Image (cartoon, rainbow, N blue to C red; front, side, top):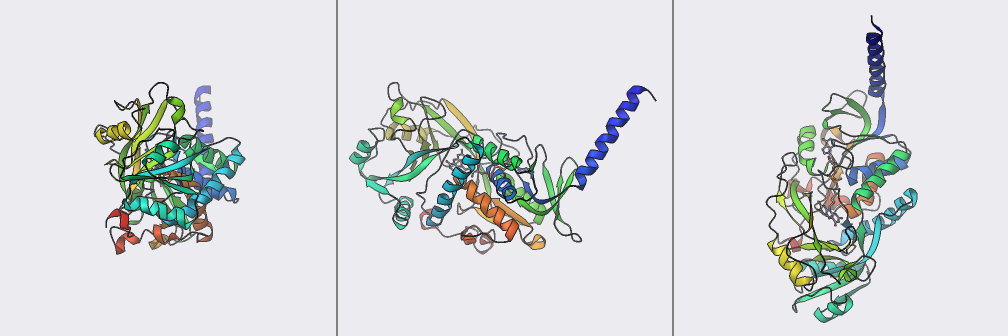
Length: 422
Ligand SMILES: Cc1cc2nc3c(=O)[nH]c(=O)nc-3n(C[C@H](O)[C@H](O)[C@H](O)COP(=O)(O)OP(=O)(O)OC[C@H]3O[C@@H](n4cnc5c(N)ncnc54)[C@H](O)[C@@H]3O)c2cc1C
């Protein structure tokens, strides 16, 4: 045998051994999907001393899911009052994670909600502020202009609600932070590993997780946090049909007219904001791209996450009009200067889906999906809840009835919400 051949044979046998060792590895918890929810979960589980494997189908920090980009808003002013305690716990957990990693991902701002005075969603926001004594002010058109130095202009029949707990989370940086913290706690991170099936081990207990490149891993427990792919993977694994609809959506950045940039900058009095009624709009102060402000529509068009249209259908007419009218003509409403595509995973009632998978998996597999375009801010508490569910079989301090996956069997529309016009 030639030297070259012998060398190749040695390499092959080394690889076989490594692979064998790897096949032999067992984990306390396998987390499938490394967006913000899976990464936060891996951090929370590994923080408690458990051995975790985090699997991602694409490259880590890719741009084909829901968690990439520069910014996400955080606010406690929610129309559904049960999200308030979850946001408040998340604030604490964001700060805790920042203190462990040593850099910032959360930047404080006020929150400003606005809309027609009779809008039900806006009224529920006010009710939540009242219920939890969130410092807030209800403002008319003139008061809005005075408070925000003329940067917003609302119609006479609208009201504004200014509240204290708003801000911006740096999105990709936050996902990377959770992954780094999980790694520091001993988590094994593997990307380019598409999970194609999860099966119960009837003899040994736990589950086997199979990837499309022919590998398999054993875990005592498994968490599925696969975003827009939730319906597909859950159907394959368990036969359960979850009504989680992926939407492709577009984030838009607009140019602030020259001389007005300071008015819209983070760190001043300009808030993170939500506009209720039609169209539903959200935005953040100027931060990631100096001189630009993020203003986008909350919504999108249905898509298959594996056959994305990549954006041709986004109609921007109503958004342009909103930018022109509500931002006091101080922002150029011609065209957005930077855009980025992303996906929402919508449930019919816009509530999260957080539950045990059940059936033959019992409490061994937990699902966290359907974050309906508003989950990022709560990823720390979602990670904590998913960790509780897999490790102790129940989640402390949170009412999970709103998030049960079985709710759609009882009513395809899910939980009743007055402002969703059921
Ligand atoms: C434009 C936009 C703006 C938003 N704004 C806000 C906001 O201001 N505030 C807020 O709170 N929230 C906001 N959200 C929502 C928030 O970003 C999402 O709720 C959150 O990112 C969802 O994270 P995820 O981990 O569930 O999904 P993802 O980030 O998509 O992660 C799922 C991961 O699983 C992987 N995966 C899928 N299938 C498999 C498989 N079979 N095997 C292995 N891996 C797999 C995917 O590749 C992906 O990386 C916004 C979302 C978008 C798109």
